[in-house]
Image (tube, rainbow, N blue to C red; front, top):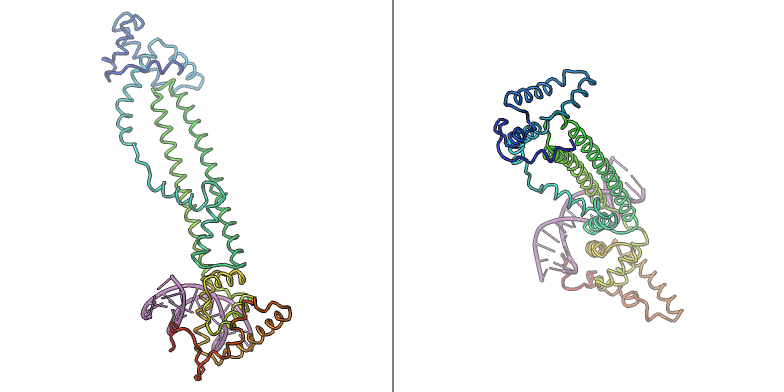
Length: 352
DNA sequence: TCAAATGATTAGTA
DNA sequence: TACTAATCATTTGA
C-alpha cells in the first residue's frame, strides 16, 4: 500500500498488453528476460489473486505477503487500477455529480430562523414573540405559555443537536473504518485512492440524507409546536377582575367620549397587562354593547360613577385633584344622553 | 347543561 | 386606519 500512489501515474492505454506502464516495466530489465516468462509471471499472479479467498486465513496472509513482494505486483496493480478507473469510475463520476440541494437549504434556513440550529439565544423566543404578537396575546398567562413554548423548543433543539452529533460521529467512524478496510484490501485488489475518495463521498451522501430526514422531522416538530402555541393563544381568556375594573373605570369616566387615544390605550394596556389591540377590542365591544342595552349597564355606570367620585373626593382632600386623569368626565357621564336616552358620541358612532 | 358574558374576528364604512 | 356591527367561540356561573 505504501508505494501505491507512485505506481499509478501511467496515463495512456487501457489494455494490459499494450499498457505503457507495464511495457516500460517489462523493458527496463525488471520485468523478466523474455515474453513467455513475463506472461507466466502475470498468469501466476492472477491465479494467486483469484484463489486467495479459497485458502485459510494464515495461508491467505502468507500468500498476500508473497504477492506484495512479487516483482510484477506494482506494475500489475498499476494497470488494474487504471483499467478500473477508466471504465467504471469515469462513468459513475459523471453520474454522481449532484446539484446543491434546495430542500436542504430551506430546512437549514428554517431551523436557523426558528432558533433550533445556530446560536441558542434569540431565534426561538423571537419566533414565540412573533407568534404572540400575531395572536394579539399578552398578560401573565400568556407569558406562562410563552415560557412553555420556549421550554419545548429548547427540548427539540437539544434532541436535534444530540442526534446530529451522533450522526456525525457515526459518519466519521464508519468513514474511517471503510477507508482502513479499503486500504487494507488495496494490497490484494486494485483499489485506487480515487476510488476510496469516491466511497467516502458515497458514505457522506448517505449520512447527509439521514441528516436531512432528521432536519425534516425537526422542522415538522417545530411547526406542530408553533401551531399548537398559536391555537392556545387563540383561545379566549377572560381578563382578570382588576383589568376589567380599570377598563370600566376609564369607560364610565369618559362616557361622553369613550374613545381612548393611542397613548391612553397604551397606558391602559400596561396597567391591565394586555395589548393595545386588546384594549381596542375591549372598548369596541363595550361601546356597542353599552349602546345596545344602556338600561342594563345603568347600574354598572352608577357604580363606577360613585367609585370615581369617591376617588376624586379623596384626591381633592389630599390637594391634587387637578392632576387626576379620570377627573374630566368622571362626574359628567350622567349628562351624556339625549332625551331618548341615546348616548352623545361622535358622528362616526353609528346609531342603529 | 345551558344561557349569559365576554374576548376575538371579520366585513363593511367613512 | 379606526371604527361599527355582526358573529364566532370560549368561559363562567347558576
